Length: 316
Image (cartoon, rainbow, N blue to C red):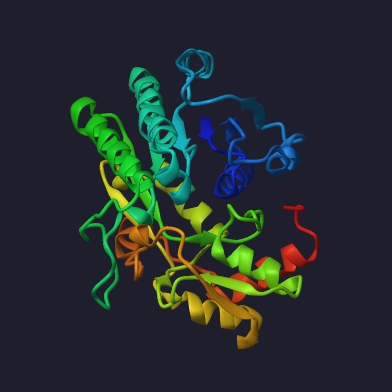
């Protein structure tokens, strides 16, 4: 099967690419390297199924048209996006163009060939969780940042193509994903940043009070979920969550990682208006439709990520 993966040089994209190649599919990766890194895909260069890396933007309609016409993709995993909440607040135009307009351009090419699209959205579209059962797909949305707003708009466009054109499409909402190959600097995730600082003997900085909770999903579990959504028609026209099903406060996460309360410091929140106080995922729909359940516990995932960063990972 010929597959296009946008954002394949990114953190999650790298693991999705690996799984698709391990399963023997012909893969093309399109990435403008604004978030991703070419080093994430260099290991695939000797794989005969890794057909091409294209450095380019999803906003280039001529490039998209040429790629789809030449390779007749059966499936498009659309992960390419601007993903930083603060960047979206500072510069909403760029996030809207990449996340909403870029998705529209991808959809137009998929429509011509009836290519299935797996659209990567985010748990950041949800309002906070107010129930012990967690956030399911019917939970209220609250786009508290332009990033979340752009994703909601793109989700609706994706689903409109399913209903208007009978084009196979699914919207997936993974919760906070972490693991090896995630950036450990300012643009990285909280687990990677905390682990890097802990390994270097530095303080762990927490935005705000640290009582906000996150449902942390290990990246290989996430990649398995993403890939399976592409090969199962039962999720067509659906929105599907994926998470660990357990949440942890940022305070407790920091203490779990460092074990030393004196090395934890609270700092002023950079975007308190876009903070979601409680995120807890209900993945029952993914279990029912895909047979997907997470396999890696938080403790095991953190241990694996610590080892990767400690071994040098990629210098980030």
